[in-house]
Amino acid sequence: MIIFDCHVLKMLHLGGMASADCYRPPRRMYSQALSLNAYFSAFNLARIPNADISAFMNPAQIRRSIVVCSASLIVTLMASCSTMYSPAPPPPPPAPMHAGSGSSRSDAYASKTRIDERPGLGTSAGQERYSQLETTRMLRKSDAPDAVESFHYNDEAGARAMAGVMGGSMTKHSGLFPAAGERLKVGLVRYGDAYPHYDVNGKRIVIGENGGHYEVRLENRSKKRIEVVVSVDGLNVLTGMAASPKQRGFVLEPKERYDVDGFRKDRTTVKSFVFGSVARSKAASTGGASNVGVIGLAVFEEDEARAKAELQREQLARENANAFPGAR
Image (tube, helix red, strand yellow):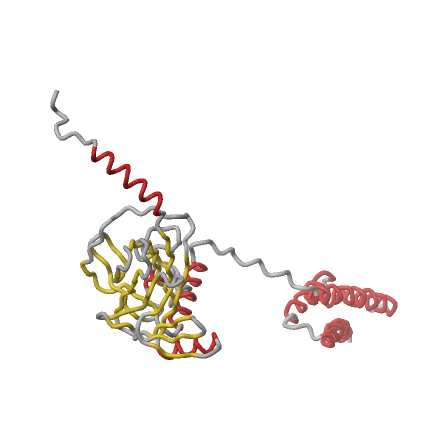
């Protein structure tokens, strides 16, 4: 009977633990059982010998023990529940990405992927060819070009799509076309024959072919000496760097024709212009392909008055040249 009453006391405490199920704490019952075991150990209920249990069998003492133990159990359960439902600490912030590590590599990969997916033509640097280039003196009339113009190129599908975006009437032509206020006639040629082009409200789109090489033909239609800075896909064809109208170009005498035949490597060698994919273009290999499909022309006229005065000074110097400077 005494042992039974002690078990009733333990069952009352365990019943208090079971009442916590109504809160449905997730995956925390094992830790509560540990708290209850520690609680029972604190009261040494499990260690009371049978001979001493009768000392606790006074009804008043039993009731007082039940009240005290129940109150302690409630406090313990409330503390456990508050711990179980307290918000979890925020996760630590992610480690910073360092420049030049995975972030830049992934950006480069994404950029490469976008370039690979772009349709249409770009210009690649093809085989090396012998091409002699001579230097000459040119006095520009102004630091600013007298005319800046551009035209586009693409394959048939891309040219038609671009013409549709531009709007207006579209006509297909063969041969060269005027540029820079009639100072030039230009076009892309292969073996001397010009690629066809679309004329859309005065804007030209040359129709190229994947794998075909080309040259940029320049014909000086004026009676003046001019200099033409040429860019392909945003690159100066003389340097392969980002183009600017203030850079040097090709000097054409009146009525002279010249075919720009590639990206120049040195004074005697070029790498030919070849229609190819955007991903394989010269522009893509130099850091970006946002300007593929465009040919740029910046035209400077010569300052004829300065050129004439300089020529006269040169002739005076020659006239006064001494044939025997070593004679005394």
